[in-house]
Image 1: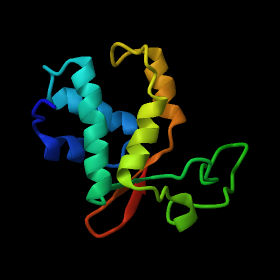
Image 2 (image 1 turned 45 degrees about the vertical axis):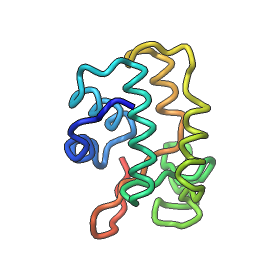
Image 3 (image 1 turned 120 degrees about the vertical axis):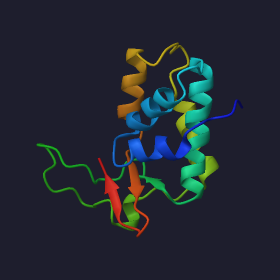
Image 4 (image 1 turned 90 degrees about the horizontal axis):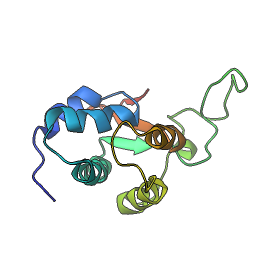
Length: 133
């Protein structure tokens, strides 16, 4: 993998945002990356953030999303049952498997669908406070 620069800035700029914030911050701080390199860095960085405890994901299918049709979900991000407890490499493998193979740039509409179909990211403050977008 090509060297990625400004990791601290990428994490700072995307903290608390939906996963699209992380994806966009990578290219903002590393504008010379090709789309394939960008994708590789994205999954690498997710795995690193999972390993270091900087992020978690909502478990697939966990009822913790508030909506007009679901004003009182069963869980919140603070409930252990709502958090995805697979090893980081297993989570990344599943996220990669869902990636739209025919997406060729970051403005691809299938990529938007992908980002909103994968489980939500939970950011972890240095003091352990959980933050979700």
